[in-house]
Image 1 (cartoon, rainbow, N blue to C red):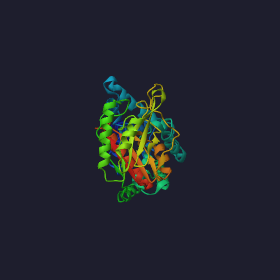
Image 2 (image 1 turned 90 degrees about the vertical axis):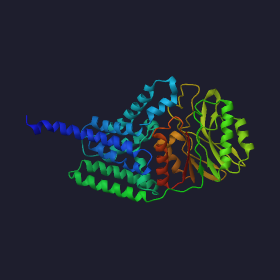
Image 3 (image 1 turned 180 degrees about the vertical axis):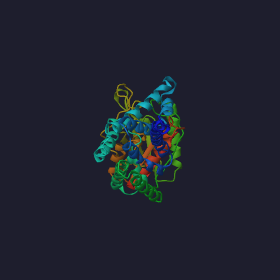
Image 4 (image 1 turned 30 degrees about the horizontal axis):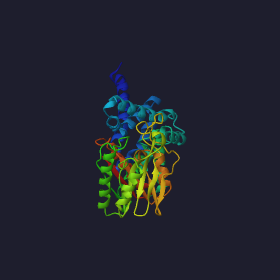
Length: 397
Protein backbone atom coordinates (compact mmCIF):
# COMPACT_ATOMS: atom_id res chain seq x y z
CA UNK A 1 0.00 0.00 0.00
CA UNK A 2 1.44 3.37 -0.99
CA UNK A 3 1.88 6.21 1.48
CA UNK A 4 -0.67 8.33 -0.40
CA UNK A 5 -3.26 5.53 -0.26
CA UNK A 6 -2.72 5.04 3.46
CA UNK A 7 -2.98 8.78 4.10
CA UNK A 8 -6.30 9.13 2.26
CA UNK A 9 -8.55 7.79 5.06
CA UNK A 10 -6.68 9.93 7.57
CA UNK A 11 -7.23 13.00 5.40
CA UNK A 12 -10.94 12.27 5.05
CA UNK A 13 -11.26 11.76 8.80
CA UNK A 14 -9.49 15.06 9.45
CA UNK A 15 -11.89 16.90 7.15
CA UNK A 16 -14.88 15.36 8.90
CA UNK A 17 -13.56 16.21 12.36
CA UNK A 18 -12.95 19.76 11.12
CA UNK A 19 -16.58 19.98 9.98
CA UNK A 20 -17.87 18.89 13.39
CA UNK A 21 -15.46 21.31 15.09
CA UNK A 22 -16.68 24.13 12.83
CA UNK A 23 -20.29 23.43 13.81
CA UNK A 24 -19.29 23.54 17.49
CA UNK A 25 -17.40 26.78 16.86
CA UNK A 26 -20.46 28.40 15.29
CA UNK A 27 -22.56 27.32 18.26
CA UNK A 28 -19.99 28.57 20.76
CA UNK A 29 -18.91 31.88 19.26
CA UNK A 30 -22.15 32.68 17.47
CA UNK A 31 -24.41 32.23 20.46
CA UNK A 32 -23.01 34.45 23.19
CA UNK A 33 -22.76 38.04 24.26
CA UNK A 34 -22.33 39.58 20.78
CA UNK A 35 -25.70 39.84 18.96
CA UNK A 36 -24.14 40.25 15.51
CA UNK A 37 -22.29 36.93 15.90
CA UNK A 38 -25.68 35.20 15.65
CA UNK A 39 -25.45 35.98 11.94
CA UNK A 40 -23.02 33.06 11.58
CA UNK A 41 -25.75 30.50 12.29
CA UNK A 42 -26.84 29.91 8.66
CA UNK A 43 -23.46 28.27 7.96
CA UNK A 44 -24.90 25.23 9.77
CA UNK A 45 -26.86 24.52 6.58
CA UNK A 46 -23.62 24.25 4.60
CA UNK A 47 -22.07 21.79 7.03
CA UNK A 48 -25.27 19.74 7.07
CA UNK A 49 -25.69 19.62 3.29
CA UNK A 50 -22.11 18.52 2.63
CA UNK A 51 -22.25 15.75 5.24
CA UNK A 52 -21.18 12.43 3.69
CA UNK A 53 -23.60 10.33 5.75
CA UNK A 54 -26.68 10.55 7.95
CA UNK A 55 -24.62 9.83 11.07
CA UNK A 56 -22.20 12.63 10.23
CA UNK A 57 -25.09 15.03 9.62
CA UNK A 58 -26.41 14.14 13.07
CA UNK A 59 -22.99 14.63 14.70
CA UNK A 60 -22.61 18.05 13.06
CA UNK A 61 -25.97 19.14 14.48
CA UNK A 62 -25.21 17.62 17.91
CA UNK A 63 -21.93 19.56 18.10
CA UNK A 64 -23.74 22.78 17.18
CA UNK A 65 -26.54 22.38 19.74
CA UNK A 66 -24.25 21.28 22.57
CA UNK A 67 -22.12 24.38 22.01
CA UNK A 68 -25.17 26.65 21.94
CA UNK A 69 -26.53 25.19 25.20
CA UNK A 70 -23.15 24.95 26.94
CA UNK A 71 -24.43 26.84 29.98
CA UNK A 72 -27.10 24.22 30.70
CA UNK A 73 -25.08 21.74 32.84
CA UNK A 74 -23.82 24.36 35.29
CA UNK A 75 -27.11 26.22 35.38
CA UNK A 76 -29.08 23.05 35.98
CA UNK A 77 -26.80 22.06 38.85
CA UNK A 78 -27.43 25.42 40.54
CA UNK A 79 -31.15 25.26 39.74
CA UNK A 80 -31.73 21.91 41.46
CA UNK A 81 -29.12 22.44 44.19
CA UNK A 82 -27.20 19.86 46.18
CA UNK A 83 -30.22 17.57 46.42
CA UNK A 84 -29.74 16.45 42.81
CA UNK A 85 -26.83 14.70 41.13
CA UNK A 86 -24.58 16.86 38.92
CA UNK A 87 -25.13 14.22 36.24
CA UNK A 88 -28.73 15.43 35.83
CA UNK A 89 -27.58 18.68 34.23
CA UNK A 90 -25.06 16.97 31.96
CA UNK A 91 -27.55 14.30 30.99
CA UNK A 92 -30.28 16.79 30.18
CA UNK A 93 -27.81 18.84 28.14
CA UNK A 94 -26.68 15.86 26.05
CA UNK A 95 -30.24 14.59 25.63
CA UNK A 96 -31.50 17.96 24.37
CA UNK A 97 -28.61 18.25 21.91
CA UNK A 98 -29.16 14.73 20.62
CA UNK A 99 -32.92 15.21 20.20
CA UNK A 100 -32.64 18.56 18.43
CA UNK A 101 -30.13 17.01 16.03
CA UNK A 102 -32.49 14.18 15.04
CA UNK A 103 -34.47 16.12 12.41
CA UNK A 104 -31.22 17.13 10.71
CA UNK A 105 -30.32 13.44 10.44
CA UNK A 106 -33.82 12.39 9.44
CA UNK A 107 -34.12 14.88 6.57
CA UNK A 108 -30.53 14.52 5.33
CA UNK A 109 -30.05 12.79 2.01
CA UNK A 110 -27.09 11.85 -0.15
CA UNK A 111 -29.04 13.12 -3.16
CA UNK A 112 -28.21 16.72 -4.02
CA UNK A 113 -31.83 17.68 -4.47
CA UNK A 114 -34.95 18.51 -2.51
CA UNK A 115 -33.27 20.89 -0.11
CA UNK A 116 -36.16 23.33 -0.45
CA UNK A 117 -38.40 20.95 1.51
CA UNK A 118 -35.85 18.98 3.55
CA UNK A 119 -34.29 22.11 5.08
CA UNK A 120 -37.77 23.52 5.75
CA UNK A 121 -38.82 20.27 7.40
CA UNK A 122 -35.75 20.18 9.67
CA UNK A 123 -36.21 23.80 10.72
CA UNK A 124 -39.92 23.31 11.33
CA UNK A 125 -39.28 20.23 13.47
CA UNK A 126 -36.94 22.12 15.81
CA UNK A 127 -39.12 25.23 15.88
CA UNK A 128 -42.52 23.95 17.03
CA UNK A 129 -43.59 21.51 19.76
CA UNK A 130 -42.78 18.92 20.76
CA UNK A 131 -39.07 19.44 19.96
CA UNK A 132 -39.59 23.18 19.81
CA UNK A 133 -40.16 23.18 23.58
CA UNK A 134 -36.41 22.59 23.85
CA UNK A 135 -35.57 24.47 20.64
CA UNK A 136 -32.57 26.56 21.61
CA UNK A 137 -30.19 27.71 18.89
CA UNK A 138 -32.58 28.09 15.95
CA UNK A 139 -30.47 29.29 12.98
CA UNK A 140 -33.30 31.53 11.77
CA UNK A 141 -32.52 33.81 14.73
CA UNK A 142 -29.72 35.15 12.52
CA UNK A 143 -32.31 37.16 10.58
CA UNK A 144 -32.16 40.07 13.04
CA UNK A 145 -28.39 40.35 12.73
CA UNK A 146 -28.35 40.07 8.93
CA UNK A 147 -31.49 41.90 7.85
CA UNK A 148 -32.60 44.42 10.49
CA UNK A 149 -35.94 46.22 10.06
CA UNK A 150 -37.08 43.83 7.33
CA UNK A 151 -39.60 41.84 9.42
CA UNK A 152 -40.86 38.65 7.75
CA UNK A 153 -38.92 39.37 4.56
CA UNK A 154 -35.72 39.15 6.59
CA UNK A 155 -36.79 35.76 7.91
CA UNK A 156 -37.39 34.56 4.34
CA UNK A 157 -34.05 36.02 3.24
CA UNK A 158 -32.28 34.06 5.99
CA UNK A 159 -34.01 30.88 4.85
CA UNK A 160 -32.97 31.65 1.27
CA UNK A 161 -29.38 32.11 2.42
CA UNK A 162 -29.44 28.71 4.12
CA UNK A 163 -30.90 27.12 0.99
CA UNK A 164 -28.15 28.75 -1.07
CA UNK A 165 -25.57 27.15 1.22
CA UNK A 166 -27.22 23.76 0.71
CA UNK A 167 -27.17 23.92 -3.07
CA UNK A 168 -23.67 25.44 -3.15
CA UNK A 169 -22.35 22.56 -1.03
CA UNK A 170 -23.46 19.98 -3.58
CA UNK A 171 -22.96 21.91 -6.83
CA UNK A 172 -20.42 21.11 -9.52
CA UNK A 173 -18.54 24.32 -8.72
CA UNK A 174 -18.78 23.94 -4.97
CA UNK A 175 -15.82 26.09 -3.97
CA UNK A 176 -16.82 29.06 -6.11
CA UNK A 177 -20.50 28.91 -5.23
CA UNK A 178 -19.83 28.47 -1.52
CA UNK A 179 -17.49 31.47 -1.60
CA UNK A 180 -20.25 33.52 -3.24
CA UNK A 181 -22.70 32.64 -0.45
CA UNK A 182 -20.04 33.42 2.17
CA UNK A 183 -19.63 36.83 0.51
CA UNK A 184 -23.39 37.43 0.67
CA UNK A 185 -23.39 36.50 4.35
CA UNK A 186 -20.43 38.82 5.06
CA UNK A 187 -22.04 41.74 3.24
CA UNK A 188 -25.28 41.20 5.13
CA UNK A 189 -23.38 41.19 8.42
CA UNK A 190 -21.54 44.37 7.48
CA UNK A 191 -24.81 46.06 6.59
CA UNK A 192 -26.58 44.79 9.70
CA UNK A 193 -23.75 45.99 11.90
CA UNK A 194 -24.23 49.57 10.72
CA UNK A 195 -27.91 49.67 11.71
CA UNK A 196 -28.93 50.98 15.13
CA UNK A 197 -31.07 49.08 17.61
CA UNK A 198 -34.65 50.28 18.15
CA UNK A 199 -34.77 52.81 20.98
CA UNK A 200 -37.15 52.91 23.92
CA UNK A 201 -37.57 55.26 26.84
CA UNK A 202 -38.63 52.36 29.06
CA UNK A 203 -36.14 51.33 31.71
CA UNK A 204 -35.22 47.77 32.66
CA UNK A 205 -33.66 47.38 36.10
CA UNK A 206 -31.46 44.41 37.03
CA UNK A 207 -31.57 43.10 40.61
CA UNK A 208 -29.59 40.73 42.81
CA UNK A 209 -32.09 38.68 44.80
CA UNK A 210 -30.61 35.19 44.84
CA UNK A 211 -32.99 32.26 44.87
CA UNK A 212 -36.29 34.09 44.49
CA UNK A 213 -39.13 32.15 42.93
CA UNK A 214 -39.27 28.40 42.39
CA UNK A 215 -41.29 27.80 45.53
CA UNK A 216 -39.01 29.83 47.81
CA UNK A 217 -41.64 32.20 49.19
CA UNK A 218 -40.69 33.03 52.74
CA UNK A 219 -43.20 35.69 53.83
CA UNK A 220 -40.75 37.99 55.59
CA UNK A 221 -38.13 37.75 52.84
CA UNK A 222 -40.80 38.42 50.20
CA UNK A 223 -41.99 41.49 52.10
CA UNK A 224 -38.45 42.86 52.31
CA UNK A 225 -37.79 42.13 48.64
CA UNK A 226 -40.93 43.98 47.61
CA UNK A 227 -39.97 46.97 49.75
CA UNK A 228 -36.61 47.05 47.98
CA UNK A 229 -38.27 46.73 44.57
CA UNK A 230 -40.68 49.56 45.33
CA UNK A 231 -37.76 51.75 46.38
CA UNK A 232 -35.91 50.89 43.16
CA UNK A 233 -38.99 51.70 41.07
CA UNK A 234 -39.37 55.06 42.81
CA UNK A 235 -35.80 56.02 41.92
CA UNK A 236 -36.30 55.62 38.16
CA UNK A 237 -36.95 58.62 35.96
CA UNK A 238 -38.57 56.65 33.12
CA UNK A 239 -42.35 56.54 32.77
CA UNK A 240 -42.22 52.76 32.24
CA UNK A 241 -40.06 50.49 34.41
CA UNK A 242 -39.50 46.74 34.03
CA UNK A 243 -38.35 44.59 36.96
CA UNK A 244 -37.19 40.96 36.57
CA UNK A 245 -39.10 37.69 36.53
CA UNK A 246 -40.37 36.25 39.84
CA UNK A 247 -38.88 38.93 42.09
CA UNK A 248 -42.20 39.98 43.69
CA UNK A 249 -42.85 36.42 44.90
CA UNK A 250 -46.44 35.23 45.30
CA UNK A 251 -48.89 37.85 44.06
CA UNK A 252 -51.34 37.85 46.96
CA UNK A 253 -53.81 40.51 48.05
CA UNK A 254 -51.27 41.71 50.60
CA UNK A 255 -48.59 42.05 47.91
CA UNK A 256 -50.93 43.97 45.63
CA UNK A 257 -51.91 46.28 48.48
CA UNK A 258 -48.26 46.92 49.32
CA UNK A 259 -47.56 48.07 45.75
CA UNK A 260 -50.77 50.08 45.42
CA UNK A 261 -50.31 52.02 48.64
CA UNK A 262 -46.75 52.87 47.57
CA UNK A 263 -48.29 55.19 44.93
CA UNK A 264 -45.38 55.01 42.51
CA UNK A 265 -45.87 57.79 39.91
CA UNK A 266 -45.15 55.60 36.87
CA UNK A 267 -46.05 52.28 35.28
CA UNK A 268 -44.10 49.36 36.73
CA UNK A 269 -44.05 45.81 35.37
CA UNK A 270 -42.77 43.19 37.79
CA UNK A 271 -42.44 39.41 37.68
CA UNK A 272 -44.43 37.37 40.18
CA UNK A 273 -46.09 33.99 40.79
CA UNK A 274 -49.89 33.81 40.68
CA UNK A 275 -51.03 31.01 43.05
CA UNK A 276 -53.65 28.60 41.73
CA UNK A 277 -55.78 25.95 43.37
CA UNK A 278 -54.05 22.68 44.12
CA UNK A 279 -50.61 24.20 44.66
CA UNK A 280 -49.80 25.05 41.03
CA UNK A 281 -49.00 28.58 39.93
CA UNK A 282 -48.71 30.78 36.85
CA UNK A 283 -45.49 32.62 36.15
CA UNK A 284 -46.75 36.13 35.43
CA UNK A 285 -46.00 39.77 34.75
CA UNK A 286 -47.92 42.19 36.94
CA UNK A 287 -48.55 45.82 36.01
CA UNK A 288 -48.90 48.55 38.62
CA UNK A 289 -49.65 52.19 37.84
CA UNK A 290 -51.19 55.12 39.73
CA UNK A 291 -54.61 54.15 38.33
CA UNK A 292 -54.59 50.39 37.75
CA UNK A 293 -52.96 47.11 38.73
CA UNK A 294 -53.21 43.44 37.91
CA UNK A 295 -51.76 40.40 36.16
CA UNK A 296 -51.31 41.29 32.49
CA UNK A 297 -49.40 38.29 31.16
CA UNK A 298 -49.14 34.59 31.97
CA UNK A 299 -46.12 32.66 30.71
CA UNK A 300 -46.81 30.38 27.77
CA UNK A 301 -43.72 28.18 28.11
CA UNK A 302 -42.19 27.71 31.59
CA UNK A 303 -38.85 25.90 31.79
CA UNK A 304 -39.55 22.19 31.15
CA UNK A 305 -38.94 19.94 34.17
CA UNK A 306 -37.48 22.79 36.24
CA UNK A 307 -40.73 24.80 36.42
CA UNK A 308 -43.23 22.92 34.29
CA UNK A 309 -43.65 19.43 35.74
CA UNK A 310 -47.36 18.68 35.48
CA UNK A 311 -47.00 15.31 37.20
CA UNK A 312 -46.52 17.12 40.55
CA UNK A 313 -48.77 19.46 42.50
CA UNK A 314 -46.39 22.46 42.57
CA UNK A 315 -45.88 23.00 38.85
CA UNK A 316 -45.91 26.19 36.85
CA UNK A 317 -48.87 26.09 34.47
CA UNK A 318 -48.04 26.33 30.76
CA UNK A 319 -50.48 28.66 29.01
CA UNK A 320 -49.72 27.18 25.59
CA UNK A 321 -52.50 29.01 23.78
CA UNK A 322 -52.14 32.26 25.64
CA UNK A 323 -51.44 35.53 23.81
CA UNK A 324 -47.95 36.94 23.51
CA UNK A 325 -49.21 40.51 23.86
CA UNK A 326 -51.49 42.57 26.09
CA UNK A 327 -52.89 46.07 26.46
CA UNK A 328 -52.40 48.19 29.56
CA UNK A 329 -53.69 51.73 29.84
CA UNK A 330 -53.96 52.09 26.09
CA UNK A 331 -50.47 50.82 25.29
CA UNK A 332 -49.78 47.63 23.34
CA UNK A 333 -47.07 45.46 24.93
CA UNK A 334 -45.43 42.20 23.94
CA UNK A 335 -43.98 39.75 26.46
CA UNK A 336 -41.19 37.19 26.36
CA UNK A 337 -40.85 35.85 29.86
CA UNK A 338 -37.41 34.28 30.44
CA UNK A 339 -37.32 30.84 28.78
CA UNK A 340 -39.61 32.02 25.98
CA UNK A 341 -36.80 34.24 24.71
CA UNK A 342 -34.83 31.14 23.67
CA UNK A 343 -37.57 29.58 21.53
CA UNK A 344 -38.65 30.54 18.03
CA UNK A 345 -42.42 30.12 18.12
CA UNK A 346 -43.18 32.25 21.22
CA UNK A 347 -40.91 34.98 19.81
CA UNK A 348 -42.65 35.01 16.43
CA UNK A 349 -46.09 34.92 18.05
CA UNK A 350 -45.22 37.98 20.13
CA UNK A 351 -43.65 40.06 17.35
CA UNK A 352 -46.32 39.07 14.82
CA UNK A 353 -48.86 41.01 16.89
CA UNK A 354 -46.84 44.22 16.31
CA UNK A 355 -46.57 45.48 19.89
CA UNK A 356 -45.21 48.95 20.65
CA UNK A 357 -42.74 47.59 23.21
CA UNK A 358 -41.60 44.06 24.12
CA UNK A 359 -40.95 43.27 27.79
CA UNK A 360 -38.32 40.58 28.38
CA UNK A 361 -37.80 39.94 32.12
CA UNK A 362 -35.63 37.06 33.33
CA UNK A 363 -34.75 35.38 36.60
CA UNK A 364 -31.12 34.41 36.02
CA UNK A 365 -29.86 33.67 39.53
CA UNK A 366 -29.44 30.01 38.55
CA UNK A 367 -27.55 30.79 35.32
CA UNK A 368 -25.28 33.62 36.42
CA UNK A 369 -21.69 32.86 35.57
CA UNK A 370 -22.79 30.88 32.49
CA UNK A 371 -23.35 31.91 28.87
CA UNK A 372 -27.15 31.91 29.25
CA UNK A 373 -27.93 35.50 30.39
CA UNK A 374 -25.74 37.10 27.72
CA UNK A 375 -27.25 34.76 25.15
CA UNK A 376 -30.78 35.79 26.12
CA UNK A 377 -29.89 39.47 25.79
CA UNK A 378 -28.40 38.88 22.34
CA UNK A 379 -31.46 36.96 21.17
CA UNK A 380 -33.89 39.65 22.35
CA UNK A 381 -31.71 42.30 20.69
CA UNK A 382 -31.67 40.67 17.25
CA UNK A 383 -35.39 39.90 17.18
CA UNK A 384 -36.11 43.51 18.15
CA UNK A 385 -33.84 44.60 15.30
CA UNK A 386 -35.56 42.35 12.77
CA UNK A 387 -39.05 43.67 13.55
CA UNK A 388 -37.87 47.21 14.38
CA UNK A 389 -39.67 46.98 17.72
CA UNK A 390 -38.11 48.31 20.94
CA UNK A 391 -37.45 45.71 23.63
CA UNK A 392 -36.39 46.12 27.23
CA UNK A 393 -34.77 43.47 29.44
CA UNK A 394 -34.45 43.09 33.22
CA UNK A 395 -32.41 40.33 34.87
CA UNK A 396 -32.34 39.10 38.43
CA UNK A 397 -28.94 37.61 39.30
